[in-house]
Length: 270
Ligand SMILES: Nc1ncnc2c1ncn2[C@@H]1O[C@H](COP(=O)(O)OP(=O)(O)OP(=O)(O)O)[C@@H](O)[C@H]1O
Ligand SMILES: [Mg+2]
Image (cartoon, rainbow, N blue to C red; front, side, top):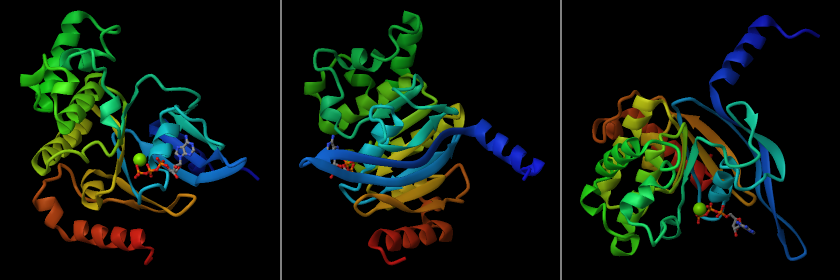
């Protein structure tokens, strides 16, 4: 049987624009002489400039999935493609913001040097200086450039990690509950910065959070991970227009509809 031309074209254009494609990914860990399946049958596609938010209870495999996407852990089954290439190691222009910020920074480097870490060997010194200054301003830490990580609060350390990720101007940001340790005002400001950066640079994002509202506000798709092993029980397309607004967007009927439906999915009511 031949494939219709329209189907071939549709497939080709989807592949052109998909920065990530995850096909039936399964992860198992060795345990007690056997194996324990942590993730099962995870599939999604992420297009350029889009954000996939992932929500799910603790222990369902969110960080594990991010490690697979970042090439830090090979899946037991299934395949992950980044820009149409199978991910076999850490891809070049993909940056991970880790959940555990206390181990993400080098304690012997000050804030400036930590933010410069990923770009200092790739770019001229003047460009590095400019990028570091700009991203520190974005995260509100210009006044702490000479401080060391141990002189900063947890939320400030996390903002340094975020600045380092943004300084590299990655094509994909993999973010593991990046704003969880921040106060409400800083969190909202950084959510808006992230949306603005995506609009300006076209970078894509996989964003893990426990906060349903945050998942909707940032997402073009929201995946709900549940169960043991963790499975995507739903991937909802978010059709809220952009640019989004912290007050207007969150009060709209579409937003409230997503919130109710995701709550129900997380409770297992759907
Ligand atoms: N390297 C590993 N070896 C064995 N088991 C692991 C390993 N990494 C994670 N696990 C197990 O996989 C499961 C999922 O862990 P993971 O850290 O991905 O959860 P999570 O959804 O990110 O949780 P949280 O919301 O608390 O951060 C847990 O039961 C954990 O114990
Ligand atoms: Mg986690």
